[in-house]
Length: 187
Image (cartoon, rainbow, N blue to C red; front, side, top):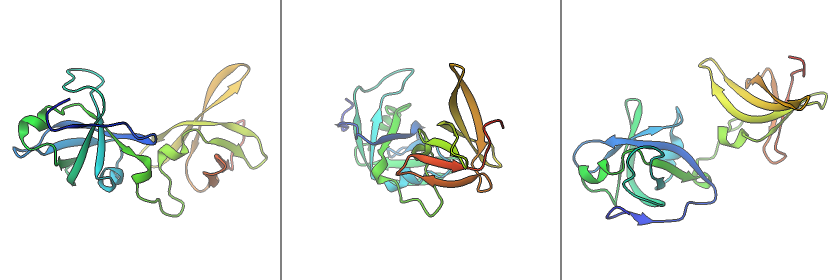
């Protein structure tokens, strides 16, 4: 573990939300690449959990916890500082670290707003009750978000896409793990 970093356990509801790109300035700030266009999850949590980079040099092992004192948007990234990181050298040692926050610390989504992570794994059913697949991931096309689903056909896994827009999405029921859509199986 790097000096000043506290070892921790990853929360059971941890979600990967970004990674540390590099040091920013000389006072221990670091630049973060958020995985979301709206990095509210980074701003809402004052505790970030770090895992070493998947590739390249690993400057620490295990899970480290940072107490974030400030985080803000800067250009297309986020810059942040933590109590445990007090100079440029310490910030550089975090380069490539993967950032996780507890899902429970995310801000509450507004009406008809959903975190993508909450939609992954939901079953998609059309108005006639036909199962269309399970959400594997979401894709931002610029104009809209698209649900990417897997479904079984003749023993093979096939991909299906449905735009995640109100004209096709009738209801999202997170507690029932279901999305009701106006979409036919043969589309």
